[in-house]
Amino acid sequence: MKKVIYLAGGCFWGVEAYYQKLKGILDTEVGYANGNFANPSYEDLKAHKATHVEAVKIYYEDQTIRLTQIIEHLFRIINPFTVDHQGGDYGHQYRTGIYYDEESDYQTVQEFINMEQKKHTQKIRVEVEPLAHFYCAEDYHQDYLDKNPFGYCHVNFNVIKAEERKK
Image (cartoon, helix red, strand yellow):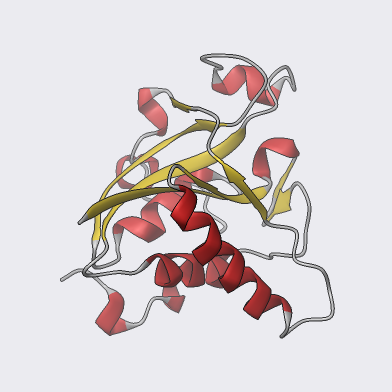
């Protein structure tokens, strides 16, 4: 069945490119989630007018990749203990989060984070919230690293195992 989840892990360029490489991911779209006004621009985020997070809308086939696996991948590419900071990116728009449409996803996400927290003494700082709204980012941000293969990216693609990759 086709499902949707929204993830934030710092700059959305690398997060989108990472998930596009995984089996079971059908499509992605980058945008701005859960902020203080409708239809923000990237410039609004940079100027700190908007409180949105850079997020990736992920469409996935749940018979091929489970939500817990998607979250596990997020934890491979983020530092879950930082606030408003991933890689070389600093600011409220770069916080980490998991945003859901379906209430049933909340329990799955929370159980994963609770299990992950038991492995660490530092507090996990990943937001888990229902999606209030998602606004598609400007066209030049979509598939950014495909268009700009040498563009900035804080994500380590080497953590994807061969059997997890699309052929």
